[in-house]
Amino acid sequence: MTDPADAARRSPWRTATVVAIRDETPTAKTFRLALPEPSSHRAGQHYVLRLTAPDGYTASRSYSVASAPDGTAEIELTVERLADGEVSTFLHDVVVAGDELEVRGPIGGWFVWDADRPALLVGGGSGVVPLMAMLRLARRLGRSDLVRLVVSARSPDVLYYRDELPGPESRIAFTRVAAPGSARPPGRLTPGDFARVARPDATAYVCGSTGFADAASDLLLAIGFPPDRIRVERFGPTG
Image 1 (spheres, rainbow, N blue to C red):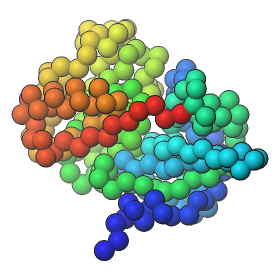
Image 2 (cartoon, rainbow, N blue to C red):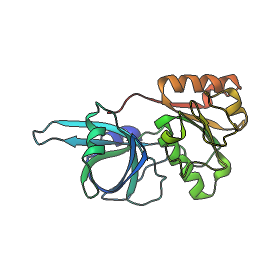
Image 3 (tube, rainbow, N blue to C red):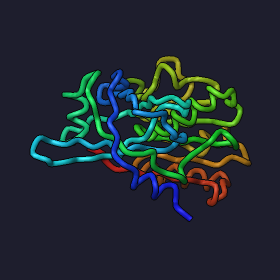
């Protein structure tokens, strides 16, 4: 039997057109891409984006899809700009609407959510990107009752999707500077942040840096979350 994820990795490169770019934070932008055909992605999957120089040199990076599956040919990728990143600096500093980019995917079959079961989403920093696709899917289908999202960010100015993310499904924990009027003081996540929102039958999706993912997983275990219902996506700098 063919592994769907493996088949996606071996799928051909396709040309996508940049139709819109918007700022998310001072160092992150969302790129809306139009594909040649409707996207078949599931919430939590990613695409590989490749740049090719005139001399034939290529550089590719994986970026999670931030948009919910909707049957259209457009997807959104949110990219953090890294000072020494080959791909991210080009996307931020050079790419404009109308440009064409090579992409391949969607990829991933384990860290996905189809709005068919309760989910606790836990994201740190840019780790919220694939979780935002899940939250958007739940809202689009009218199944917000199935999902709760806990996000950790240093301060309001670096919170991804800060105008859209807040809602009855989400809890935001600022670690250094809290938002004005916030009832939660600044600080790292605690078991209490999860205990208030975790359903006993939920599957947890944790995404962030290795340090964040390990710490969040330990907190989930501390409140009695079964290890076999914790799915983790770790990432390092993606330049």
